Length: 264
Image (tube, rainbow, N blue to C red; front, side, top):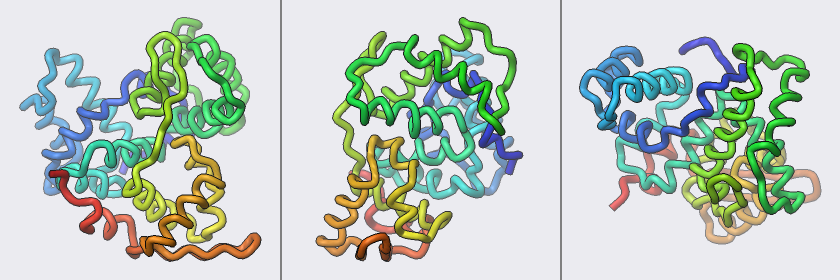
């Protein structure tokens, strides 16, 4: 796997979500080949039907930067190959790509979610610019390159476009929050993924990563109690203590199970 860029702020990778392109590439991914060889084949055979070599180059660059298909992101690849419904798969793509992409994750979990909770109705590109300028003063954050005002504005626009691509917002020049609902199968997958990194049930419920799906801890707990009622998992809570037992022992096992199977 490449060196982690989890705290690097790049202006390039937020230009495109590449949701459909990633799904298509992962469907044809060969685990017997290296990441470099797979991406070379993608460009040579034009798996995504790109109309220009520049587009192919950009897709290859971003996928190489974002994902580790042979390691951490293998369940996401296997789900694409199994024909997982794209509306179920898309939130999982967002989870995986933000593991090593600080800017999008931080924007969604903090800035955008805070505006959602505050009841903000409309958001424009210029509303995001102050957030980006403050990043330079954040400790432990590395800004890639020198950003001009034009670059900052382009990144702000790109972040809002990404939010819309993943169904969190609607609109073109002016964005509004959508009525977003995380699919049940996606919710269960994310629970497994979070539990692998943090087994404490209370910390899972309180995780800021749920903010990427416009969910707070109360929303997560309501969904857990609903799924417990239907015996999809076991969840008990008593004060500050919580116990969570999931259907499978790992994210990989859950991804390979019948609930995440091929779409009709």
